[in-house]
Length: 330
Image (tube, one colour):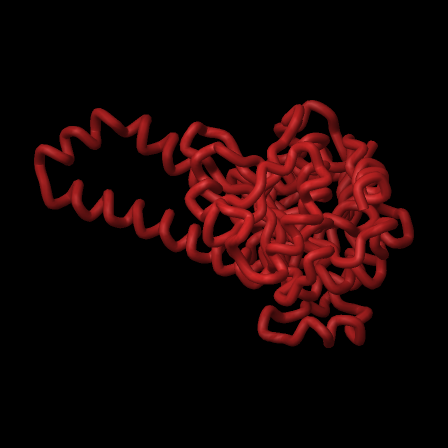
């Protein structure tokens, strides 16, 4: 069985939502897996039902790397939960890790302690975005690399293609380069160079604009971590604001309230589609083994889906495909 190491203490709301998510994943999964929980057991062990204890091992650890700390300090904190979680994968006691803690620290440790895949110069954090047709697009990078060269963007395209094909099951994913216009003459000097590099891939469709992320015209959207992180945070803010505006206007109109009652199922489906919890976490592509970085505010649904993401990753050939594709197209 697969074994997943989980940093229990890293999330904004403490260990309980994380434990509940792990238990929910074990309960709902058709195929069982093993879990190593890293954290202060006195704070969460009472939440583990007896029937699931045989799948769970606890590594005792009291030191939590705070969200307010600089990611560069994590290498000195060898007794922290995130450091020990990464080391479990490095020591082959687990094949994947899930963390809702400090994303920068998780990324740095995974890169330095687990190492990069052959041909990868910069790992990238990838996240899923909902589309208007009910599908998903993958955007990378969304925060790992603020400053990128054109060859890094090229690598992101190759890694994103492999993830969408191998893990999400899309037969021939379309790769797009995020820019301020569809014409290849648009963009910065770096994106123009990246455009030329990506043309060697048969699934590259050229530049795409921000709106294309959500209209199902592209499967893999490539950008640097600065643009990608702003895009991610803006999208989360827009989704939250739309939900609040709908509720506000419904309350103001008796007619709208009646319509809303009739449309409850539609609103429920809409909320589910734009909820980040439904997508679990963000895989760090380009490192050895599997690292899933979760939102700090992850609830049990998000953690459950992050566990499923890790299993899907482990059951794919993504790492091998990334290395072969980089060697082929570079």
